[in-house]
Image (cartoon, rainbow, N blue to C red; front, side, top):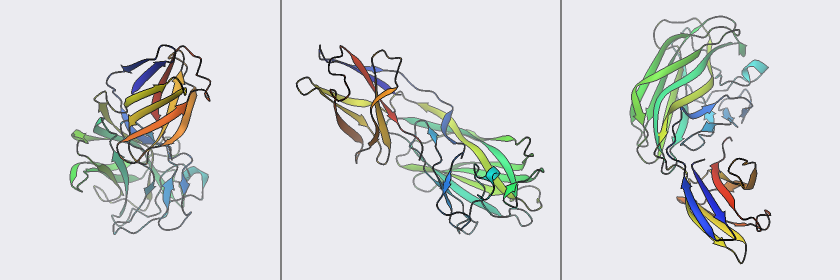
Length: 302
């Protein structure tokens, strides 16, 4: 939630209440649990339904894996223990090979986002299932701006994967905070395999519980910019800043504590930079209330 908006139908009182600036550690994160594949055990697999948790950015959507030459890769899926992680099917040992993937980061209108670090679980995979032995893997995380220029990168060298009984959570911290200040979509490029430090024997490099961390500020983010109440028709029209392709929910409360009720939880953004929706308050049973509060939320996942 970024802003609350209240309306008193009886008095025609409309108030906009700013909540203030928002500080958060997680910009975008996924556990990969329940992810689906466009094709199973085939080249050009795409992992979708990643159920991203986002703050200050749009849902990044799907992820695919590619070879060093840019060819598509399959993702391991046959065994249950690899179905909830991101495990490209390429042997990254004995040859200094690697895979790449990318995460799209589009800052929401009005928000200011800065990246500080990446955390993830480092897995080693063998034969399409979790490998119960330590293996070394390397990673590079690169921030690429909308023009295609790399503005920051950080390496993880010879990270041990641990075993199924204890998989390490690795932190890769950028040398300096990375502001996503240019208009357009940034890309977090991820390179995983065996290309730095010691040469490892054969293994497949995989990640889980990926979290892109930083700060979200500005106190603007998602903001309702206009409220129009029609007491004759019992309608309420809300307009807020939005991004094409995003899905929103409008929820309401009578006490600012319980937000379980909604007017609509599947509103597709309009084209352009704002979305405007008219709601029939009588259909929601709100026509006789002295006061109700409304808020707009970004729907995550998918």
